[in-house]
Image 1 (tube, one colour):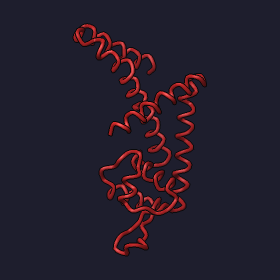
Image 2 (cartoon, helix red, strand yellow; image 1 turned 90 degrees about the vertical axis):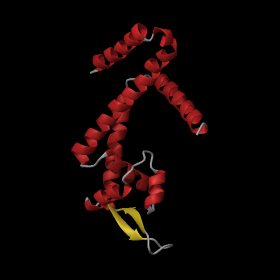
Image 3 (cartoon, one colour; image 1 turned 180 degrees about the vertical axis):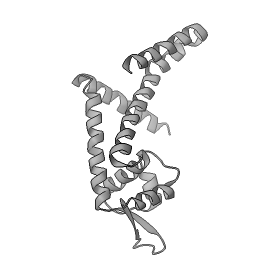
Length: 170
Protein backbone atom coordinates (compact mmCIF):
# COMPACT_ATOMS: atom_id res chain seq x y z
CA UNK A 1 0.00 0.00 0.00
CA UNK A 2 2.82 2.40 0.91
CA UNK A 3 4.44 2.07 -2.51
CA UNK A 4 1.04 2.41 -4.18
CA UNK A 5 0.43 5.78 -2.52
CA UNK A 6 3.89 7.05 -3.32
CA UNK A 7 3.48 5.86 -6.92
CA UNK A 8 0.11 7.60 -7.02
CA UNK A 9 1.75 10.89 -5.96
CA UNK A 10 4.52 10.45 -8.52
CA UNK A 11 1.94 9.77 -11.22
CA UNK A 12 0.19 13.07 -10.39
CA UNK A 13 3.50 14.94 -10.63
CA UNK A 14 4.19 13.47 -14.05
CA UNK A 15 0.71 14.38 -15.20
CA UNK A 16 1.23 17.98 -14.12
CA UNK A 17 4.63 18.20 -15.78
CA UNK A 18 3.42 16.65 -19.02
CA UNK A 19 -0.03 18.17 -19.35
CA UNK A 20 -0.12 21.37 -17.31
CA UNK A 21 3.48 22.49 -17.53
CA UNK A 22 2.62 26.20 -17.63
CA UNK A 23 0.89 25.81 -14.25
CA UNK A 24 3.24 23.20 -12.80
CA UNK A 25 4.81 25.42 -10.13
CA UNK A 26 1.41 26.67 -9.02
CA UNK A 27 -0.15 23.18 -8.82
CA UNK A 28 2.95 21.43 -7.51
CA UNK A 29 2.23 22.55 -3.92
CA UNK A 30 -1.23 20.99 -4.10
CA UNK A 31 0.28 17.66 -5.14
CA UNK A 32 3.21 17.93 -2.71
CA UNK A 33 1.19 18.89 0.37
CA UNK A 34 -2.56 18.94 -0.24
CA UNK A 35 -2.81 15.52 -1.84
CA UNK A 36 -0.73 13.73 0.84
CA UNK A 37 -2.87 15.40 3.53
CA UNK A 38 -6.03 14.12 1.85
CA UNK A 39 -4.58 10.63 1.44
CA UNK A 40 -3.40 10.46 5.07
CA UNK A 41 -6.88 11.55 6.17
CA UNK A 42 -8.49 8.96 3.88
CA UNK A 43 -6.30 6.12 5.18
CA UNK A 44 -6.80 7.18 8.79
CA UNK A 45 -10.58 7.33 8.31
CA UNK A 46 -10.57 3.89 6.70
CA UNK A 47 -8.77 2.47 9.74
CA UNK A 48 -11.18 4.19 12.10
CA UNK A 49 -14.23 3.05 10.15
CA UNK A 50 -12.98 -0.54 10.15
CA UNK A 51 -12.66 -0.48 13.96
CA UNK A 52 -16.07 1.16 14.36
CA UNK A 53 -17.91 -1.27 12.12
CA UNK A 54 -16.16 -4.51 13.04
CA UNK A 55 -15.64 -4.02 16.77
CA UNK A 56 -18.42 -1.62 17.80
CA UNK A 57 -21.10 -1.90 15.10
CA UNK A 58 -21.33 1.89 14.71
CA UNK A 59 -20.54 4.39 11.97
CA UNK A 60 -18.16 7.35 12.20
CA UNK A 61 -21.15 9.69 12.43
CA UNK A 62 -22.59 7.70 15.32
CA UNK A 63 -19.21 7.81 17.04
CA UNK A 64 -19.08 11.59 16.54
CA UNK A 65 -22.46 11.97 18.27
CA UNK A 66 -21.40 9.76 21.17
CA UNK A 67 -18.14 11.68 21.60
CA UNK A 68 -19.89 15.06 21.47
CA UNK A 69 -22.23 13.89 24.24
CA UNK A 70 -19.35 12.40 26.25
CA UNK A 71 -17.25 15.57 26.04
CA UNK A 72 -20.23 17.81 26.83
CA UNK A 73 -20.93 15.77 29.95
CA UNK A 74 -24.67 16.43 30.09
CA UNK A 75 -27.77 16.05 27.90
CA UNK A 76 -27.96 18.23 24.82
CA UNK A 77 -30.65 19.33 22.43
CA UNK A 78 -30.32 17.84 18.94
CA UNK A 79 -29.56 21.33 17.61
CA UNK A 80 -26.81 21.99 20.14
CA UNK A 81 -25.46 18.50 19.53
CA UNK A 82 -25.30 19.08 15.79
CA UNK A 83 -23.56 22.43 16.27
CA UNK A 84 -20.97 20.98 18.65
CA UNK A 85 -19.94 18.02 16.53
CA UNK A 86 -16.53 18.00 14.95
CA UNK A 87 -17.96 16.47 11.81
CA UNK A 88 -21.42 17.60 10.84
CA UNK A 89 -24.13 15.10 10.11
CA UNK A 90 -26.93 15.82 7.69
CA UNK A 91 -29.44 13.32 9.10
CA UNK A 92 -29.27 14.00 12.84
CA UNK A 93 -32.78 12.67 13.53
CA UNK A 94 -32.06 9.42 11.69
CA UNK A 95 -28.70 9.11 13.47
CA UNK A 96 -30.23 9.64 16.89
CA UNK A 97 -32.91 7.05 16.13
CA UNK A 98 -30.21 4.47 15.25
CA UNK A 99 -28.29 5.20 18.46
CA UNK A 100 -31.50 4.94 20.46
CA UNK A 101 -32.30 1.57 18.84
CA UNK A 102 -28.80 0.37 19.78
CA UNK A 103 -29.53 1.54 23.34
CA UNK A 104 -26.52 3.87 23.40
CA UNK A 105 -28.50 7.07 24.04
CA UNK A 106 -31.83 8.02 25.54
CA UNK A 107 -34.16 10.96 24.98
CA UNK A 108 -35.23 12.88 28.07
CA UNK A 109 -37.65 15.80 28.47
CA UNK A 110 -36.07 19.22 28.67
CA UNK A 111 -36.51 21.05 31.99
CA UNK A 112 -36.73 24.37 30.12
CA UNK A 113 -39.12 23.32 27.37
CA UNK A 114 -41.31 20.32 28.09
CA UNK A 115 -42.11 19.99 24.37
CA UNK A 116 -38.54 19.19 23.43
CA UNK A 117 -36.39 16.16 24.13
CA UNK A 118 -32.72 16.23 25.04
CA UNK A 119 -30.20 13.58 24.06
CA UNK A 120 -28.23 11.83 26.79
CA UNK A 121 -25.69 9.03 26.81
CA UNK A 122 -26.63 5.96 28.77
CA UNK A 123 -24.11 3.69 30.49
CA UNK A 124 -23.58 1.49 27.39
CA UNK A 125 -23.07 4.59 25.22
CA UNK A 126 -20.48 6.03 27.61
CA UNK A 127 -18.57 2.76 27.71
CA UNK A 128 -18.65 2.30 23.95
CA UNK A 129 -17.56 5.91 23.32
CA UNK A 130 -14.68 5.63 25.79
CA UNK A 131 -13.57 2.24 24.46
CA UNK A 132 -13.77 3.32 20.81
CA UNK A 133 -11.92 6.55 21.63
CA UNK A 134 -9.17 4.45 23.23
CA UNK A 135 -8.87 2.48 20.00
CA UNK A 136 -8.65 5.71 17.99
CA UNK A 137 -5.89 6.92 20.30
CA UNK A 138 -4.02 3.66 19.64
CA UNK A 139 -4.41 4.13 15.88
CA UNK A 140 -3.14 7.71 16.18
CA UNK A 141 -0.17 6.64 18.28
CA UNK A 142 0.68 3.88 15.82
CA UNK A 143 0.53 6.25 12.86
CA UNK A 144 2.39 9.08 14.57
CA UNK A 145 5.08 6.73 15.90
CA UNK A 146 6.42 6.68 12.32
CA UNK A 147 7.60 10.26 12.94
CA UNK A 148 10.40 11.32 15.27
CA UNK A 149 9.36 13.42 18.28
CA UNK A 150 10.65 16.64 16.70
CA UNK A 151 8.77 15.80 13.48
CA UNK A 152 5.57 15.26 15.48
CA UNK A 153 6.04 18.64 17.17
CA UNK A 154 6.72 20.36 13.84
CA UNK A 155 3.65 18.74 12.26
CA UNK A 156 1.51 19.72 15.25
CA UNK A 157 2.67 23.35 15.03
CA UNK A 158 2.13 23.52 11.27
CA UNK A 159 -1.34 22.03 11.48
CA UNK A 160 -2.31 24.39 14.31
CA UNK A 161 -1.04 27.32 12.25
CA UNK A 162 -3.15 26.22 9.27
CA UNK A 163 -6.21 25.69 11.46
CA UNK A 164 -5.81 29.14 13.01
CA UNK A 165 -5.48 30.74 9.59
CA UNK A 166 -8.44 28.83 8.15
CA UNK A 167 -10.70 29.54 11.11
CA UNK A 168 -9.89 33.28 10.99
CA UNK A 169 -10.80 33.50 7.32
CA UNK A 170 -14.36 32.18 7.89
